Image (cartoon, rainbow, N blue to C red; front, side):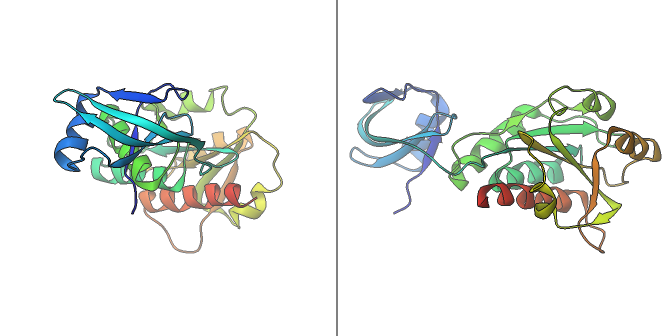
Length: 241
């Protein structure tokens, strides 16, 4: 039987955990209708998971006895960060959900020259990412950054020692995984443009920075499709090495 997972901050050395988070208590009691003796998986968001058994249920908390603690072992060896232009609400939420399932570590919503939608509820995106992490058996919840202008993103120091791949139909068609094998960076950034594509100035900036422009094939993919496909390709390669 598949055990349900819940992300909570807790002491991994504890033998017993008292869950007081209102949303989690409600979900356990009223959605899954747990009873004493039922088993659950608790994750601390740092790739640790605890297998526990419910010992007590009250109106405001749930007591779980910890039987076993372990690393999830499902995270990629190299961090893969997705920087995706802000899309229409439903499309961007789908990107967050599916990229999380694929194994992305962080997500930067980008405001580009051709971005139409500017505002996002990052609190809602975090909930979507957490639910996707729980569903897919991950050990962390991806960091959802606040929307950032693409020019400002170019100046971030975090990706200076990283491999950066920009998805664009004008790029050379290539196997992403074979190219990634050549790099020794600590992390990989993949950038996805908006529905209208990158502007000429943005493509010039990308070339100046020395970032690798790649195409995912002869067909033009929607931005949300490209984001999910490229996320999976990048993470899956890192897990398999």
